[in-house]
Image (cartoon, rainbow, N blue to C red):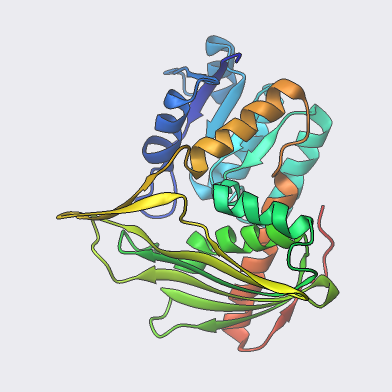
Length: 307
């Protein structure tokens, strides 16, 4: 396996998040397909030239992320970008345009769609195991950790929305968002998809221990015309409980490691990656519509086509 040089760039996220050092750099270091390179230069373009980087792991602050991704692509590098890829649809569309012109891989870090259980369920649905899906019930609940100052809908919402789209292939056309008991911590999304599919997604953060966060629930119940499929997206893994809290010990590669394998494959083979700017745009349109729905108290349609 050819090792690609990857340059970590930026450590910003929502609130105190540092996904670069907490998630991506350790995963890149453990993956045989990548070699991490560093640069002290303030310019990303100059740092790419200095290090010979082929991939940039972008974790610039959300407000700067879109411009940073574009700079990395124009510097001739493939990109893995922390979520969200950008804060507004226009920036994501601009990124999509640059990625198309350069022919480079631009992968938003929607790593939960790469989980083993999700991938297995995707294959089973595509083969018609439960017939035509007509409804998905999903829970994405994190226990404890540092609350997001922008709200957990912005922080977590795109993950289950992206997984449902990856599983079913059906775009969302209307969003009705309902607040949970604790404002900003919990949201219920009632989604109308194409071809009559509906989904209900509960997403948010429970009041657990601040210094010991863990995934409380990550599951999907898919009803089809000839059966029902239950997917526990936290598997295959073991729940480990210690005096400092709970964590998941994965059997084999976790979601981030599997995402990096998909990134490596796309770069070295030239095949389109499983997820790209179109997926980031689709998820962003849903979470933006959900925020408007919460403010208005009514369902909000999504009329814009996906890129």
